[in-house]
Image (cartoon, rainbow, N blue to C red; front, side):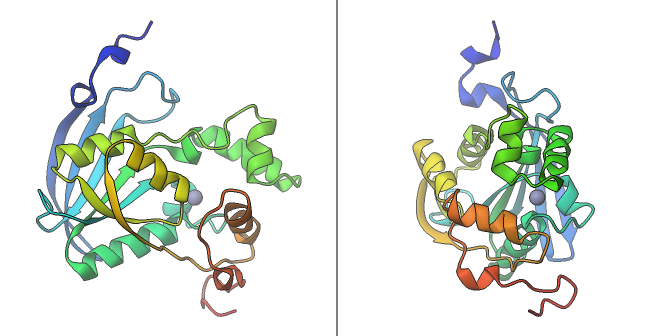
Amino acid sequence: MSSVTHLLPEQRLNLVAESNLPTEFGDFRLLVFHWEDDAAHPELSRQHLALVRGDISDKDDVPVRIHSECLTGEVFGSLKCDCRGQLVAAQEWIAANNYGIILYLRQEGRGIGLANKIKAYALQEQGADTIEANLKLHLPVDARQYDVAAAILRYLHVFSIKLLTNNPEKMQRIQELGITIKERIPTIVAANRFSLDYLRVKQSRLQHHIPNEALTVRDPNTNKP
Ligand SMILES: [Zn+2]
């Protein structure tokens, strides 16, 4: 039996490093946390990040993006998903508004890990959609957990937020963990011909708030229809 199941959230979370981080979007402070979690997929990192801009402690309605890692999109510029576009949009929004937080959670592939995500991509090449592919692999459609996000926000003395998201389930789960969401700020990324089916599934079957105009296919280089 796992020993960590008896730990309180604040006992599972440790700040292990922090430093300033100048970025192309502006200046941030990067905090690295370790989160004890025996239940997470063994391939996933236990180190989660908070990218903070401005003085956010004890403020109300702090803008927050809770973002799950997507190596293929964020490092290699994969066009199969909108993860990188959402991360960039959030970082730009927070820089422009001069304060806020990006929580970067190491939940690659909606929590199933990189290798399983690529196996699911291979099944999608044979016609499965993102949900069917996970089910064929006997994996959950969405294995993401947000308890670490709530624990980091509490650590930072942030209790009420504006959440940058299109995902109503994420909003509900964050609120169930005791964080008040005052407002939703949409993060709209236009579809390209590789991401269109994925975004349609997110809109129709996962009930994400994606406006129909975002589902007009655009050239990823020119952003024109
Ligand atoms: Zn992605």
